[in-house]
Amino acid sequence: MLDTGVLTRCGLDAIAAAEAILAGGARILQLRHKGHFSREIYHWAERMARMCSDASAIFVVNDRADIALMLGAALHVGQDDLPPWAARRVVGDGAVIGFSTHNEAQLRGAADEPVDYLAIGPMFSTVSKENPDPVVGVEELRRLRPLTIRPLVAIGGITRANAGAVLAAGADSVAVIGDLFPEGRLAALRARTEEWTRTVQPGCP
Image (cartoon, rainbow, N blue to C red):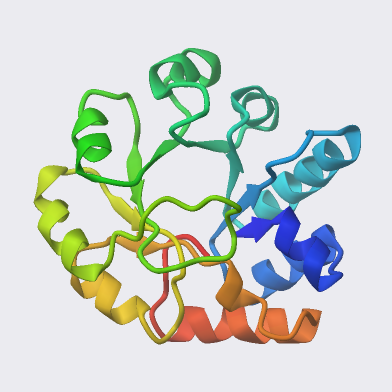
């Protein structure tokens, strides 16, 4: 996952980072941007959408149904974003929509939403969010897994060291941010992505 806040802290160019991740074998690239969606950010998203198309990868936009519609991208929304049923009206029936949940009540509440997959987390403590939700943990994931038949993506603090336990507890895939950026270098970013795809092969890098 490309988080623009993480990119800024690492001093990495967004497009170059996207190129490195796709070159490393990622088949899903998600753009997470929590600030103002400026013209520059839109141009980044536009270029990433083309790059993903060329690489036969799926491009996912966080939060913004209008941007996802314009780019023909998948959409991921959170608890404080446009509700999934409203987002579906914007992007249409053919688009992929994912929805973040953080506890049992939210997971149960998502049962009737028109989404293609659900995310659950944070699995572990994470620095990618300024005000993270309480940690879910592996054992709680194992308990919650039977509550939905939809694909379940584990998020928050996922590393190569703990991804195996998360997948064994029932997650269908994992979303990765921090563990992709070990040294703030593009060469390291590509190498780390290659390592991920060789080992646990997560669905959402």
